[in-house]
Image (tube, one colour):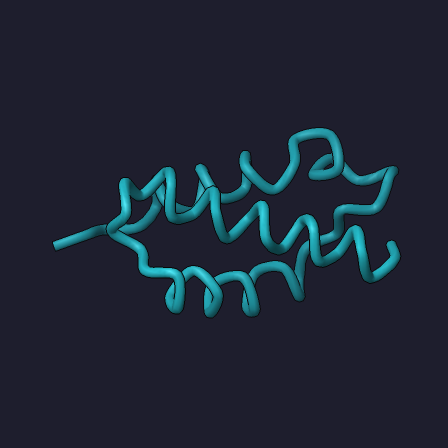
Length: 68
């Protein structure tokens, strides 16, 4: 995966985290989550996540979080 695609996926993931949390996750916190999660995630063409995408992953992560 090239840098442009990586950056696109990263930005899409960050925006999705903020959207699906209804603004409860700040941009700084979303960036931190992206640093941790995307480093370990494979979005190459053959992986299941390539089909589901970064928004699916963000929605899944937000569902597992608890907010005050």
